[in-house]
Image (cartoon, rainbow, N blue to C red; front, side, top):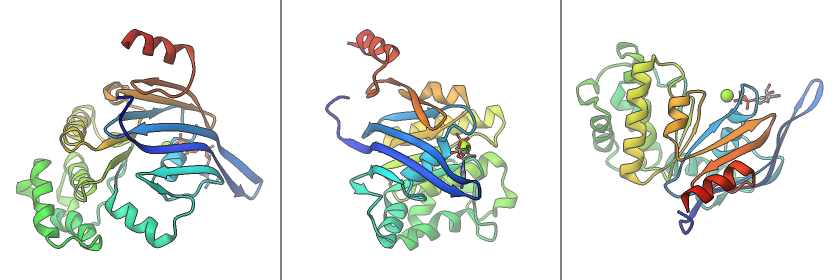
Amino acid sequence: MADRKSVINLSDVELTLESGAGPVHILKGLSFDIKIGETVGIVGPSGSGKSSLMSLMTGLEQASKGTVDVDGLILNTADEDTLARHRLSRIGIVMQAFHLIPTMTALENVAVPLELAGVDDAFDRAAHELEAVGLAHRMDHYPSQLSGGEQQRVALARALAPEPAILFGDEPTGNLDYKTGQSIIELLFDLARKRGSTLVIVTHDPKLADRCARVITMSDGKIVDDTGDTASITGTETVSSKVAKS
Ligand SMILES: Nc1ncnc2c1ncn2[C@@H]1O[C@H](COP(=O)(O)OP(=O)(O)O)[C@@H](O)[C@H]1O
Ligand SMILES: [Mg+2]
């Protein structure tokens, strides 16, 4: 793992947002490096900054300080067009709420973003992706006609369709019952592994965190633990886990 190429690199990243009551320091100096093909869980109590960190890595929010490098693009200095193209083609995102467009069929929900990204055979590709998530028989259904698990499968197909380098998830099983959540987790890891995608998932779900080779723990806007294959933060647990593996 050590000689793999880096796909995400954060260096001394801070996020400060202005509010009526003055500036709020949300992220307080984060640095880490994620290699191609790694599976990383981000855990920590509510309010610790997990979703804010996700917004920085997906280019929705810009860091107040430091650099955020995602798949070779420095997001801090990229212009809006470059960021938009990067988001459509290099990263996939699955959220807790499925965010499907209710007036579009499952097929259209997957195909339309591909068309926006300039893919020629968008509908063929979308159909192929829906087959891969087990929804070949549901392509012409609208989101309201699908169960929660099926809607999340459509969202997963949409996220994976552009063949992104990185798949981000923010509580992807948060709105699903246990059994359905488990099947989504299996699918997520299986598809990411087959395609060599890097997985970065924010979760409260211990089962989901367990499946990740590396777990980054946040508290109060800082990283307090980083354990696993390529942990880059110092700490006794990290060191002992490295020793145990070598
Ligand atoms: N737009 C905002 N303006 C001010 N504070 C915010 C904003 N968004 C989030 N926060 C605060 O930042 C902290 C981290 O939030 P968040 O990233 O959503 O945490 P988590 O996802 O770990 O629950 C919280 O204290 C939250 O209230
Ligand atoms: Mg959150």
